[in-house]
Length: 298
Image (cartoon, rainbow, N blue to C red):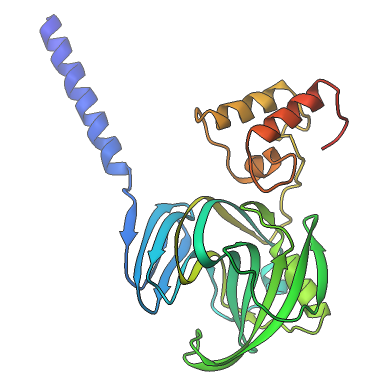
C-alpha cells in the first residue's frame, strides 16, 4: 500500500514538474539584425557590422554585448502605427535599471522616432567616454528633479525608419549619469515643443543601449513603460508603497542588497534615497539614519 502511494506521489510530482517546465519560456538570444515581440514589448537588434549578442529575458528585460562594431542598437519598448501624437497616446513614463558597462562610445537612453516630421530622439541617462551629441546646447530643462541639456542636430542622408533620409535629432542629456530610475518621457516631449522642436506622429518609445565604434555589455534588469496615465509618485524610501517609511522598507532593501530578493520598478527607484543613480550600501546607511532620526529627509 505504501509503495502504491509513493508511486502515485512520484508520478504526480513528475507531472507537475513537466507542466512547470512547459510553462517556463527560455530566454531567447539573437546575434543578427532582428525585430519581434515578447511579453507585449517590441524588441530590435540593429547593427551595420561587428559582433553583437542580445538575450531577451521577457517583460522588456534584456542583456547585450558588442565588439568590433561601427554602430549597434539593442532596444525594447513599444512601437506605434504613426497615427497618434504623444498627446493623443497619453502620459508616457519609463522605469528602468541597468548594469551598464561600456568601453568607449555608448549611450543608455530612452530612444525613438516620430514621423511627419521625421525625428530621431534620445533622452540620455548615461554614456561611455564621450558625452553626446557634441553640439551647442539650446538650453536646460529640469525633469524628475534632474537637469538635462537640450540639443537639436541634423542628420543628412542617413539610415532612418523611412530609409536613407535627412532628419532632425532631438536630445535631452543628463548633466550627471545614472543607470536606474523613472523617466517622465512626456515631460521631455513637452519641453522640446516649447523650444520649437516639433514632434510628429509616434513610431516608437524604447529603452536603448547603443554602441558606436566600441565594445561593452549591459544587463537591463527592469524595463517597463506606462502609457495613458500619470506615473506613480516617487516617494524615496517607501519601497513597499504603504505610505510610510519604516523597518519593512529597510528590510526589503537589505534583502535586495544581499541577493535574497530583487526590487524592481517603482520600488527600485524609491530605494535610491541618496539620488546617485545606484542602489547600494550607501542607500542602506542613509535609510538607517532616517529611521534613527539622525536626518529628517532624503
